[in-house]
Amino acid sequence: MKFGIVVNEGPYTHQASDTAWNFTRAALEAGHEIVRVFFYHDGVNNATRLTVPPQDDRNIQKNWSELGEKHGLDMIVCIAAAQRRGILDADEAKRQGKDSDNIAPGFRISGLGQLIDAGIVADRLVTFGD
Amino acid sequence: MSKTNKKFLYVNRKAPHGSIYALEAIEVVLIGAAFEQQVSLAFLDDGVYQIARGQNTKQIGTKNFANIFKALGDYDVRTMYVEKESLAERGLDVSDLMEITHDTDDAEDLPSIQLVDRAEMARIMADQDVILSY
Image (cartoon, rainbow over all chains, first blue to last red; front, side):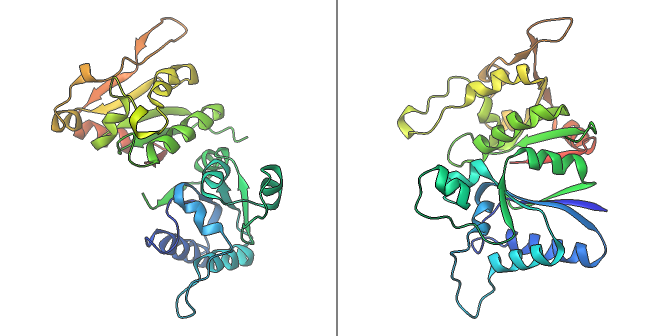
């Protein structure tokens, strides 16, 4: 089956991102296809590479980046939601006159059209978080 | 762009202000309009306040986006389901909601709001291909 994944919560405060990551991993291991992982609302905060969680805790951003790299996942961060919350890639940082970017490896910034497209292309669009 | 035509339902469950969900939901609806899918909206729980008349956000300093709902007819959004029980539980009735209309090839200013009860809302949801709930 083709799944689209929507992550609407940031890391750590709620379990949604962990659950989405576990679901995505389990779906891939079971032979399903993940057409896209779309990060919206506070979910865009999963994509900053500047988080420094304690060493005895999981690193949610790294989990996503590694899973994305391993399986060639299309991990999209909504540009409008990202700009509000200070998630920038190098191009956006330059365009907005900011002194740095913070997007983590494996994520890319794009538009909400990618969310609609995931709904159209996937057999099931599964949302994690409010 | 994908050519498949699917039924999309945007479910609005939260008050228009106090969180960003309603605003970011309407942003998805506006972008999604370009994809020529069958789009409808549903309002239940505190989401019914999103289409309440006479909203004024001046004193909380947030954007008043209520009028965007009135313009959705121009984006081919012709149906907005409103759950009767959610209105009644909040002491509201349809006269407390904005007048929202759309045009078709044959007629103008047709009402977009459809009151449905909870059981019917469940059937409407079951009939969708994609549900985005905020």
